[in-house]
Length: 336
Ligand SMILES: Nc1ncnc2c1ncn2[C@@H]1O[C@H](COP(=O)(O)OP(=O)(O)OP(=O)(O)O)[C@@H](O)[C@H]1O
Ligand SMILES: [Mg+2]
Image 1: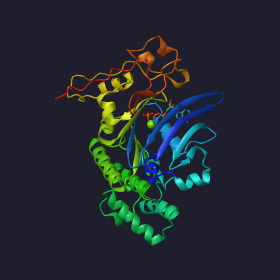
Image 2: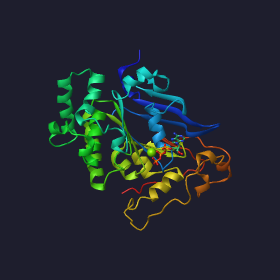
Image 3: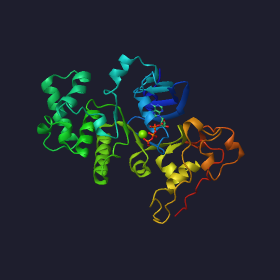
Image 4: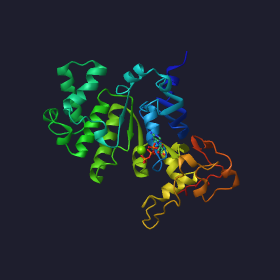
């Protein structure tokens, strides 16, 4: 029998070679190409990459929210021991909202404009936890208090349009944590909000994450958010994972030239405001990817081999992977 310590060490979420192909007419587009990563219990994984790199498609595939008519999914998404890719839809419905929930960028994606806040928060409580009307309403008010919404009882009878954008996102968070899921997938949860509200929502999520011991997949194009929030990072480029490691390793010793470029894009990452450097060029179209490494056309380190073969995500150091034939040198920290 497997010792308890070993099963504890099994990641909560283990994604292997996840591939998503969209069909349109006779064409198929590979939006996600053999993406793999793990999320340990109670930890935060940051999923970063430029627009179009496949972050949202990854999230929707994990939640099984892509219509099978449009998208073909391959690979394995092992969540608490079960492969979600192969799970019958009826069982998936029992997982979604109960053990695994999602927060979208735009709160109105998750909220019904013509249902009261109270009814919307009560729904998962009644459906998944079988709470009665009164118990669900009491719990809904508690949840609104947990996400720091003032006068929670009164808010239960209000409608989404009566709330500000920041308050609506708090309601969405209350719905997402209602059944105390083991994992939340948050897709740019603060991008639609103003800067002050962004910071408050991130603080709230971090506080709830540590209090409830949830794991989070935090999708963002903002490396600052990752640095503050995540334990591990997966960097995506053109639908592929290009670097994966603990946050301190990715920020301290980026090995993939794309990650190095992203870090140089942060204005004051190294305290030097003048060094705002972008990455030249644009993300290639998925329908027209170059034959080798998708980043090669923008990469200053690219050589002939990069233009022929797609590099695998391989170990460059213990617990640090990069998909690159000519990775950046390990930047040795100056000892004090
Ligand atoms: N339903 C669909 N049919 C065809 N292609 C799609 C579909 N949904 C997404 N794609 C394509 O998949 C690719 C990845 O899109 P995705 O939305 O995951 O990017 P993203 O990393 O979330 O970008 P952003 O930062 O802008 O949110 C894009 O090229 C997009 O056009
Ligand atoms: Mg997206």
